Length: 227
Image 1 (cartoon, one colour):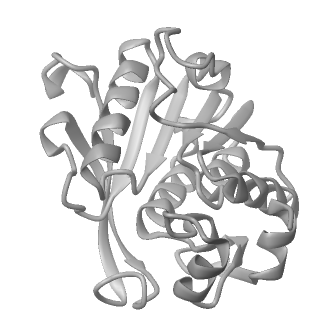
Image 2 (cartoon, rainbow, N blue to C red):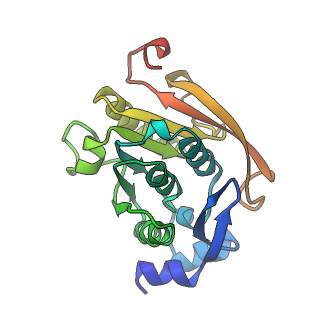
């Protein structure tokens, strides 16, 4: 079965709870779908996760963060944040994810929401900004880099922080959102806004998560210099 067929067969259209302007193909529950896809990682593309909802809300409410600029959404999942950036007036939006089912979901969701988002395979382990990785031009050329829910696992958090710091060091504005996951690099972040985000209780430890949107600065710079 193709990734497009997997995405369409396991989901239905639902408005995003905290971002009702956007609708996504959403699964009713994660575990059966996880077993069906036979992947090590959960189907992140099939749900609007807490951080993604908050970052999408922030971008829509603060369109100046992305309007008229080239945007890259890293570890995009469903494409929610990328779609929000396109709706907020970004001149171009690319979204990447390591899961090919997610790449398919991003494309389908973007079309359904009437925006142009370029989706592609992207691995944080290869996505450095110095040209030593796999040549991801979308990431290296972005003026704004967005990432949500990427600090929940130690190795992934380290890869994400390295990539995002390199992006900031290259001159990109880097915005991230996180609901207080275990490996959040709080010392590197400047909080911008917080939200109470409704989530699926089956995915989280309660029906609402407090999510903060942050700006991340380059390594070695005091936070007062990165705002």
